[in-house]
Image 1 (cartoon, rainbow, N blue to C red):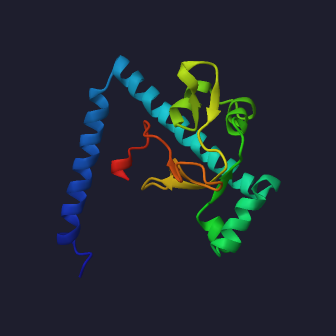
Image 2 (cartoon, rainbow, N blue to C red; image 1 turned 90 degrees about the vertical axis):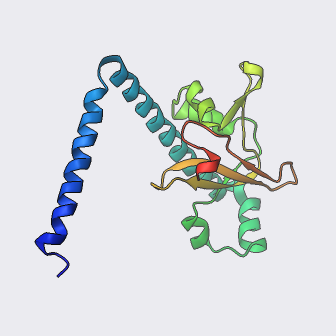
Length: 178
């Protein structure tokens, strides 16, 4: 039988070993290192959060009056059903220089440095002029193995180059590891 004591004992030992190793690693990280590690994890969690909020914003833009043409493109030209659009969480970035940035900074109150670190907005020559990376594009969220949004891909709707634009690499997104 598969659940006999002989088959379970190695699994119990491996689990105990893994638990012990992870406890040892946690004990090795103390003081300032532990605080730095916590800040790094907290920053990554904030990046995941801003991308999750942005995904929902892009989805809402597809369903409002600004997204009518994008929705026609998906349903008429690409023959996608509403179910497929919803299942793949497709969205739309309006043809605006800073709608997303304003939403994230003024409504959601995300810090500017976090918005820039996420790759959703660009600062021109490190000035106060910040603009949205994605404009007038269909948006597809890119997920990691845990199902978290880590980046976006955008397809131009008006012939703007490049035809396809992806988020830049960030603290949570490495193109070669997806």
